[in-house]
Image (cartoon, rainbow, N blue to C red; front, side, top):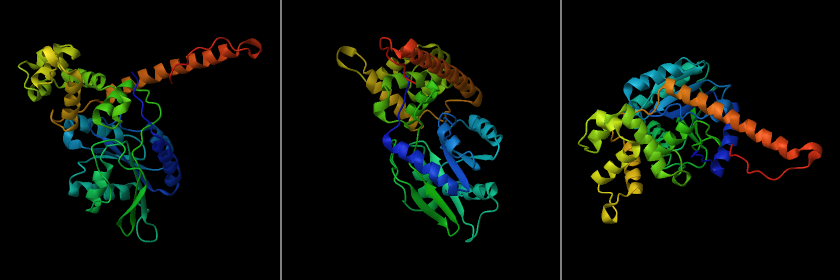
Amino acid sequence: MAIQWFPGHMHLTQKAIAERVKDTDVVIELLDARLPASSANPMLSQLTSSRPTLKVLNKQDLADPARTAQWLAHFNAQPATRAIGLDASQSTPAQQLVKACHELAPNRGGLAKPMRVLICGIPNVGKSTLINTLTGSKKAKTGDEAGITKLEQRITLTDDFYLYDTPGMLWPRIIVAKSGYNLAASGAIGRNAFDDEEVALELLAYLKTHYPAAVATRFKLDMTAHDIAAMKDEDLLEAIARKRGAILGKGRVNLQKASEIVMHEFRAGNFGRITLETPEEFAQWLAAGQQLDAERQMKKAARGNKRGGAGGAPEADVPSESS
């Protein structure tokens, strides 16, 4: 199942960012350190390509430190880009943002040329928490769900440093299937846009391959890491359901409840420090997604040509494939 979620207010956010970036010196894109590329908005890259960018891997305290180092090196190798890791709840590290912005735009500063920074990111990535940390007050609403911030806010950090906060924004078509699952698992996508069990199974498939000991430890499963890695995804979810008491009548397991438990444990960081992708993995996922999308577009174009027919007479209607 392809996961997509693009509420109406995100379209307005897209237009607002396109207008705001004209008067912006630096763009901060807040990423989830547990899924850095999946949480990087390709639409945002297009909208802000003319401005230097600071990529902030937020929630790094929940992410695999070795993989965070890989991602920082990956982003820092890109032109006009800096990347830092951050835990938005920590006040002292948060001040790194101000310093990094001045390094990216050294000619800005002072009352005559105040620094104008646009901060963007997907829903539920921690922007509001970070802003409240930076300002030392609760200027931005926070919550563990997608879509809390709905309007742009201007925040004055110092007399010559203006921060513009925008609502979290995804993109209309997520062509990397794995990204959709990772975003859903992290809480970036509204609950009505995906099937809990399907997302939980995808999450477990990755965890049992890369972090099997963490799964065994968290759910107190009497199995070795090798046993966990060898299990079928469905069997592992059932074992978790029984261990956590997610049982229906006559001993049947409640897979819906078990799926919710698995996602909650990941979002809360209860598995330990986990990262769901590496730069190399994402490059493979992206290439596969782009190829599949190209094939999909070719089929759609072929259908359009066939419907037109000779002399413009359309043939029998054929259901169009989602793109």
